[in-house]
Image (cartoon, rainbow, N blue to C red):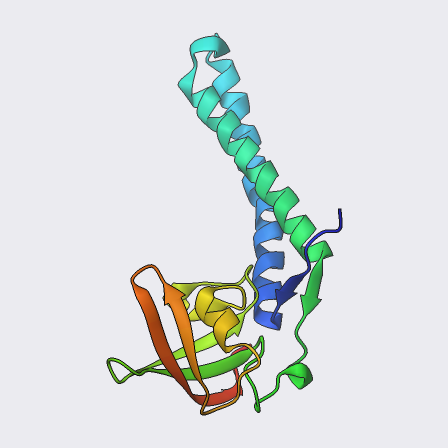
Length: 162
């Protein structure tokens, strides 16, 4: 089975590479040290510090594997690929909620970079997939748990922060 392509902006690629480097060079050593100290406490069968350290080690190794796989399957969005005529990955989009007349700015990113707290939404999210490929002025309907939200695409630009 082929691995899923991971779409990343330059910023997203750098964040993943930094996280991977940190996990490999710092966290691995910290946890190995904690395990070594915990073993010195004696009987590891009832040693909660040892158990916690081993669990953290498993989590870190799993995250390293995930990050390496994501980076292997990464496709970097080139600044030149980002269109301003229609919404694409890398676009910064202003949407107007037609019911409440509120505007929202979002940057469309690949799922690996999505962070709603930073207004970065995935191209695979309900809103992201509904607006992908649409021009300014289009009205899209997005199915959400509470019903249907209608958005009008007010503006599309390249995200200067990528």
